[in-house]
Image (cartoon, rainbow, N blue to C red):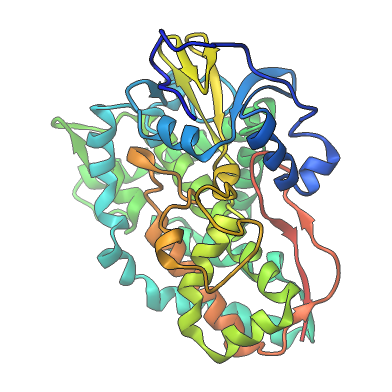
Length: 410
């Protein structure tokens, strides 16, 4: 049974048990879920090393849930990645704790609520159909990640933010490098500085235009550039982090949602045929994909004070990886958790951690779901006979889970 993490009188406290687990082990990278099962049963709190950095992993759903619903004890101000972040993280919602978190989330929430997101559907359908027609025009094979799943969300992001379309490749390259930086911080240093310079220049230009009576380029980048908190415009350092978060969270993870779901649908041809014949199955299939193959395997929290997790002493300011993907396969929450089932009970699926949980639940969840739904509907319409055309390759970042390549034919 999971003990109160903040009860320092808990009996039988101990240090983390050790299993032969490394997130960088080639077998774990290829398929982490058997290792997660072993962690849940033998080492629910594990002392882990990745790239020379020590941290704890928490594998059981009950412990994961307790941490995510205790934001005052398990804080985000030290960053959601493996490294301890400082002031450079300010502006990223994943960096703020209460009460500042709510103030910032409200600032961004309106554009991402389901009603506003629905207004973006027509543009998403247009982009998806254009990409599908381009695929069809190039023959009867494609690499689905590069040809469809990657450009669709990033084109939507560019339109939403009001970023020039000619910057698409630049932004995509930055996003890829920033994602690697979540588990390998040095990899993110150069792209972080480059995109901050880009954002700084773009925000400053929009503010100059507005302040001289002009009309800046429409889009969220302009909206956020001109908004105020407590009567003051958002500092540039916060604008940089805010847009960085939207770039990484809003693009890469949605791409992985699309590729992961298509991977599972196509690996069993009858699944794909069911989708082709009945689009009403798609929303539940998306939720099952988020449970079964969450694009983010886990993120980090840090305890302000000494704590106890599952009987294990945790010194203050310890980085703890909250393993969403392991919690999503916990048999105490999901019957037959290692089975991909598009008919799974929707009430069960409400308990998955594909978008996190609690106050840091993903702000962009509605737009990610809508983008994925439109993507699958479009592919099923244009390519009803689609099938896998070879082995897939996973993304390089160890804490993410998605297909970097997904070869298909029709």
